[in-house]
Amino acid sequence: MQVAVRAALDYAVAAPSSFVFNIAAAWTSRQNVLQETLHIEPAGMKAVEAPATRGDNRLLRVEAPPGDCRIVYEARVELSPQIARAEALMQTPFSQLPDDVLTYLNPSRYCPSDTLARWALREFGATAEDGGRVEAICDWIGGRMEYLPGSTDERTDAVAAVVQCAGVCRDYAHIGIAFCRAMGIPARYVSGYAADLDPPDFHGFFEAYLDGSWYMFDATRMAPKERFVRIGFGRDAADCAFATIVGPAQLMSMEVSAQYLGGAECGRHDAAISTA
Image (cartoon, rainbow, N blue to C red):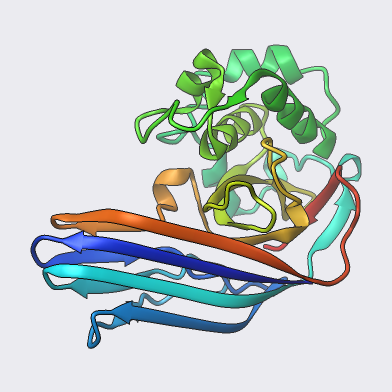
């Protein structure tokens, strides 16, 4: 299937500033960028893409002079996801986890899995050690959390979001990651575009490592997983900010969109999907 994505960001820059944007669609074996364009104003400004391996975050570095700055990214992306039943994906024993996956078992800034370990064990300790456990975690989050824009900010971690029972997509993802890690399932944060998301915005979801692959999960259930276009991944949202700014620059407006262009779909809400 194919999805068209677009991000337009406008900034007011008071003095020379440095930007690092993380808005470009990732290249993976199951996500292919067919076409993409990057437009930057004022004329003469350039973006330098930091070296990245296949699947890594594609970071764009921009040096902006004082004045108005606008960056527009557009792409057409082809998705060919790997699809499986969640219950058919077994949790990988710790002794068999690859070295590069181990870091996604550790607590991180927004995902203090050690603090939530007893809570996770009480709620999910009796579930089977497969992808159904991750679906149970998503069901638990969706049943107890209220999706409430403005209820959290950059200081809110998974514990705080659970306590107040409210948050946005990044909070839902952080809770899912923390619970998965507490149950011995490697999990990581993923930023991306989501077709049919209302209102349109950058979307945060998470991946769990099951049966040797990374599979996507989204406790918000606000858009079809098979239409997600991945941008980048990391331990939590701190590794996936769409913009990092050094200097006196202020975001004035942001427009994000993702349009489904057609193609085969899995048609199952409970399917486990991988585009890693």
